[in-house]
Length: 104
Length: 243
Image 1 (cartoon, each protein chain N blue to C red):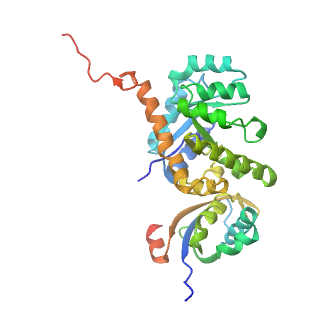
Image 2: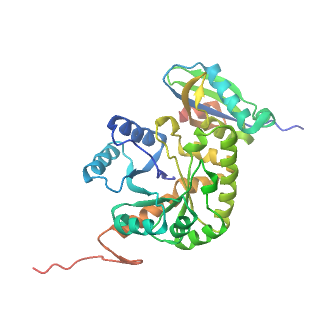
Image 3: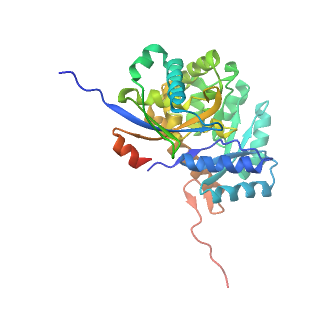
């Protein structure tokens, strides 16, 4: 039997002067992963956009749990989103969305 | 729970608002202690102003001085004059002579090397051996990894990978710091630790380099700078007052 892949949910906070949409955030993360780890590495991350929480200015994404540290490194190295200067901070990581919402 | 430190937060003295926002950001990101570099001629008022901001932001504060000597004699003179005024002494080594002198001098806490000119990174086996005997740490700043792009970043990561391997082999403590001059380059300790996987520093070592290693240095120096310190392992526990 094939084992189900474990996921990690990450809540991201974007520090930017201009408001950014969630799609641009995911694109920036994907571009950063590709830049640092190449297309092969990016294919192993299984990045997905889960939700955007406007009241907290947070974006929730998920990735493969084996690639968590690499995804975090890629997120930390992001310096711009959608052409605007920005920094991204991981405010919480969890294995379930329920636990993540309690953390953030 | 780990107590994280950023021993190199380059706040601008001339811009009080920016300094305040950077210190608050460090506190929000989860740092318990920040090291702020001063010029050796910094006035007592400048230091106490930043100390007050750090108190308000509920973050501990360590005074730091960065020396960039041109030769070993200049380094020795600076150490003699300023060592007892600062809690952290870092030396940026531009020449091999300075690097060797800094590595073997117990008054030096952190060894720094250029991030742009890789020919000036002298952290090899001989340097590591000297540093391990003198308890100096190798400081790796992480903001340049964010600033540099393409080949310059690739070359820096490659060099850091080699240096980290050498440091681990010779048990030289590694201290990770941001070196941030702006909020844009500031990241949380766990994000910085994740960034170090780019040069193969294991996660556990990275977290230690952001918490235990710098704390040990600061605690050791605070003890030495206290008026009760006599010698390693000997301190004044009480003073007799004659009435």
